[in-house]
Amino acid sequence: MKKVVFLPYLLFLSLQVLAQKTQEDLLIEAFLELNSVETSVDESELNRAIQKFDTQLIYTLEKDDIKSFKNFEKELDSLHTDFTFKESGDYELFTLRNGFARWNYILKNKKVVLKELKTFDYYDQIYPLDNDEFLLIKRMDEMSFTCCEVYIYQSKAKLTARKALSVCSWTNVDNSRTGEKDPETELYTVEGGMEYLKPLEIRFDTKRKIISYSFLSQINGKTITRKAKYKNGTFKIKSYDARAFDE
Image (cartoon, rainbow, N blue to C red; front, top):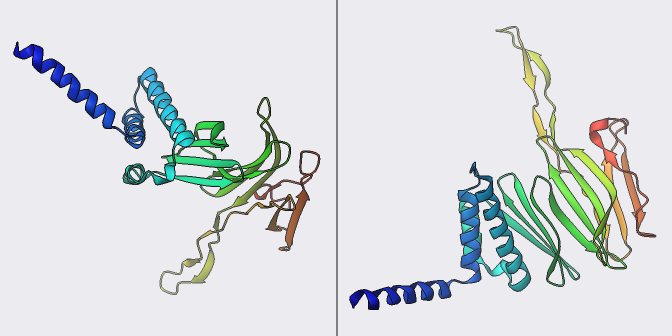
């Protein structure tokens, strides 16, 4: 008789605990589960964890305000992980960094319209355009350079993308040079060293629909500025890659 009473009571307690879990609790649980199997050799186990976290994250982004999930932020911070959330018109941009992997989402009117999971590059900026189109800037940070790519997405019946611009710039440059000769060792000293450079910024004027960027010519040291207006669904603007050393 005791078992008949005890088992239903345990089940009742379990259901109560489950019922008390908030959406934030479920999101944290899914994230921790994902991290626990990140290096698993069982591919099916990893895929289930990815799908679970993706599902919980989408639900949160569409139904809740993830910026208010302070416990979730604390869990991310304890694992040296973070996220960015940006709004522009009817659009929202969310990117979560987990190690070298990025989880990227674009929402329109609180519905996910674009996502890319576990990528090295990440969604950086978003701007609404005309005719259900939006401009997305993706960014990739390497050891010594950063590349930004501009895409124009149309979000009507089927989401399509067109690449409009690419800008790559050096971020770590070796400026070491031979210095004076040491009188004791008769060896030349080394001066200078690695220098950090701020990545080139792609700017977008939302009112005039003008995109632009500037860079210093590696040939003559002059500042070159390029800009173009959004017209007929695109921008007529030349891309730039500092690694080519041709400008």
